[in-house]
Image (cartoon, rainbow over all chains, first blue to last red; front, top):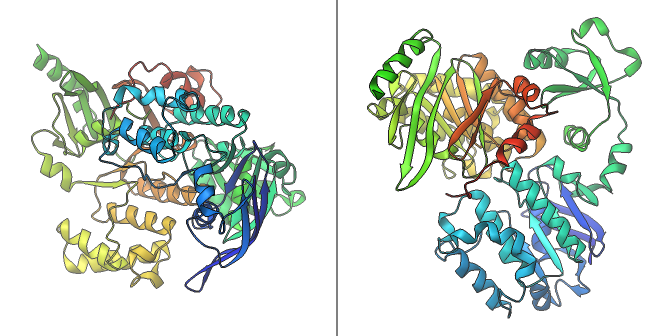
Length: 291
Length: 264
C-alpha cells in the first residue's frame, strides 16, 4: 500500500532524508520510530504529497505521489503532529467540513469514527480551539477518517494524551486495521512502538532497521541488567563513572545497565544487586540513540 | 466552622512549615455548575519531586493555574513558597519557575538574550545575570550556542534551555506542565537528569506528565480523578497498594473510574 524507493531530500545543505526505502502492506500498522529531528515528519509530508523529494519515488495505494497527487489526497487520511483543524469552527463543523470536502457525509462513514467521536460528541458545539489536548487529538483523528481513507498517516497522534486515552486510541487503530486500513504512525512512546506490526528505526534521515518489534528485541546484541535501589539517581551517577559500564539509563523504578564485557563486571564497583532481564524496545531505542 | 477547620489543619501544617513549599487545603475551583477542582489538600516539601498526575480533563491544569497565582480559588486556601495564592499572587509568581510544553522562549532572540531577558524580568542584577549565564551554558555544554538564535536549536536543546530559563532566578519551586510531551526517550532521560540535579540543589519540582515511567522517577505522586486527588503516595507504596507491576497499571485502574466526560 505504501512503497518508498530511495527517497532523498536536502534542506539548505542539510540532508534530511537519505535513500529511504520501505514497503508497507495492506492492513499493516507500520511504526516510524526515531529521535526528534530524525526526518519522520518530512517523510510523512512526502508520502502525503505535500512535499517533493529531491530524488526517489513513492507509491501510495498504487498511485505515484508526484504524478497522481490529486487522487492520492482523496484516498489518504493525514493527522499532522501539529493541531491543524479550524480552531474557530466547532467540533461538528470541522467534521462536517472535512466530510463535505471529500464528497461524503458524516452519516455515511460514522461507523468508522463512532468509538472515538462519541467521546467528544457531548461537546460538538464547542469551538475546536477550546478543546483540551486529548479531545483535539480525537477530533483530528475523526476528521482524518471521515472519508474512509485507504491509508492513514498519523504523525505522533498521542502526544499530550493521557495513558487511558492512549490505550483506547490504539485499540481503535487495531479495529481500523481489521477493516483493511493501512496505518503509518510515528510515536515517541515505546510501548506504542511495540504494538506495531513492524517498525522502522530512523535516525539522521536514514533507516537503520525494519523489523517486527519482537525481532528487533531478539536481535539486541547486549545483555541488559536491572538495578533497583533506593536512590537511583545516585547509583546512576556512580555507574556512569564505572569503566565496565557501556550504558546506564533510568527505566521507571529501576536502572537498566549494559556492560562492555559481561564477563568482566567489577562487582565491587556496583553497590547494588544486578538482575538480568529481557530487553525492551526502549532499550533498543536507547542503544541506537546513544551510538 | 470552615475557618475553625482550617485553623485546626494549619496547626498541623505549621509543624513542617520550614520544609513545606506548597500547602493546599480544600482548594476548589468552580466554573458555573462545574467543579473543575474539588477540595484538594496536600503538601509538598523542599527539594521534593512531586508528580501531579491525572487524565486529560481531570483538573490538573486548573489546579496548577491556581498554585501559580494565575487563577483565584473559589474556596479553600493554599500557600506556595510561603505566600498566599489568593492574597499574594504577585509574590507567588516571583518565587516560582514555570515551564510548559510550549517552551516560553523567544525564537528570534539568541540563547544568551533569552537568559538576559528572563533574568531581567525577575529583577536580577546585570552581573548576576552574566555569571549565571556563563554557569548555565557551561553546565549544559551550550557554550558554542551562546549566540545562536533559539529557533535554530534542536527540540531537545530548546527544552533544556527552557528548563534552565525557568529556574534561572533560583525559585524555590518550579512547575513543569508536561515538559516532555512529544519528546523521544533519549531526550526525556536527559531532561529528567536536569530535574534531579535541580532537586538536589533544593529546588522543588512539581511535574505533570503522561509518561508513566516518569511517574516512577518522582518522590511522591498524586493522581486526580474528576477534580479530586484520589491517591497520594510514593510510587512504590501505590504499586503495592494496587497490586500493580508499574505506575501505568495504577493509573489505568484509577483513571478508568472517571465518571466525568473529559472537558476543558
